[in-house]
Image (tube, rainbow, N blue to C red):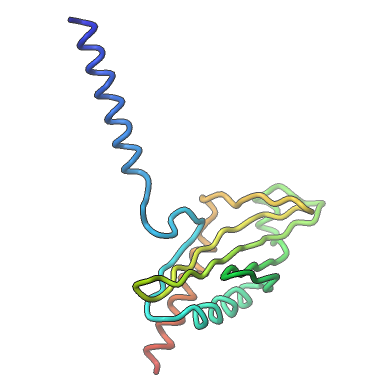
Length: 150
């Protein structure tokens, strides 16, 4: 009887763990990216133009574009160098921004950032997502503001 009780408790704990894990996983579109935003009522062309402007205003240059993904780069700031512990070598930041039209209208905009050292790149940790989320939020706010002004 003691063994049966232990088995029931173990199975219950396992099931509870799976439910807890499932609850922690987000099904929100774009949640797998470092930063994301849904922009309603604007097409991909308008979102692209505003994204390029916002990133340029933040010191990034458009380094490339392939099938809906914009790649931006900028030299690392002193803060970046301190954060990633790289003082004597070339260091830059790269952001891949994808603009995905949604069936129900608008676009999902996702950003993933990388620290680039020479030919290697490392994904920026989620803990450092705020500047990238802020950039996408600015893109959205600017488009909303422009639409309200019209």
